[in-house]
Length: 421
Ligand SMILES: *Cc1c(COP(=O)(O)O)cnc(C)c1O
Image (cartoon, rainbow, N blue to C red; front, side, top):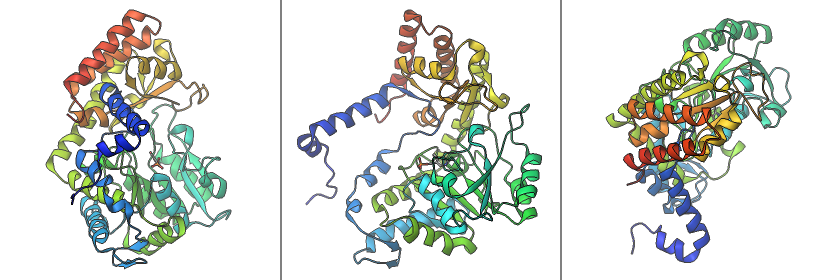
């Protein structure tokens, strides 16, 4: 009998079309430079847990309190994930079941807010300034059912303006104040958010999806001591499987657990939870601290390199894994920049910049992130090379020889830092 039944040869035989697409995706990952700030590479150990037979098991409920029999082994892995999350982040309570970041955020709404209730206001970052879809977008349940008030970054510094946050909090008396964004490069002053939340009697919720991996590695301030509740995805800088978690103060534990199950979800994805446990163990190792440091060092080097190429780095730099850059100074826009980088094997995304005069479909900026290259081991010297390639193709988008040369430089880099060797 086999110890581990997942079998690549069986997949190729049973479904060559799917197997081909999976193999092509791996080949794409091996040849493209991943500068998408929200993407990373899960380890072979994490991938093995994901491909395990724990996918077969129903386990509604929580460890020790399940609605199904036969949960003794998924209880082991889920409890490990919970205990490790609490230890790693210094949290009082952890729920490791949210299927994804959007579901974790939905559970916060379920725990603390009533739909269409004028007293259930949330003060969060305006979407155009870096808020996430689930932070009040009109096409998302957050914006359809709940009232969001938006704060913005300061027009001159392009950084958070805590006076504006305080003024809006006093004016609107929100039930929740939300910090944590998808396109904000700087450190967030969580203590200042806590003070404002206390002044108006609001809960402080931090959506740490983007930077929680840096928190785990000690390279970014932790929101956990300050916030009532922290939601985060596990697949971005944290480098785990696609999914999410919630950590919170003990006083909110019951409300959060009930909101995740049975309010918003049914059976947990126990194979993913096992993979989350593995990722958390990896994040507790000294090598992960090196990785987190490298992510931030790489981002600073890349920001400096892009500035040397003539791009305008938003807020003048970065304290995290991501850089937002205005590409108009080199005569292009975000959409064209994304396309020409894609042509030479660099994956990044177009992004609005604060107070962007251009529409989201062709914004003025790009967002680039370094978790991917840092996982591969690339360091400051490589980021200089990457900035130079990006500068070349942005300035010469129609020059075939520049693009050919740039494509070769990207391939060289990827060959020097092989993925899943
Ligand atoms: C990525 C992200 C999410 C959503 O995560 P999904 O897993 O895609 O649902 C939520 N909030 C923030 C700030 C994010 O960056």
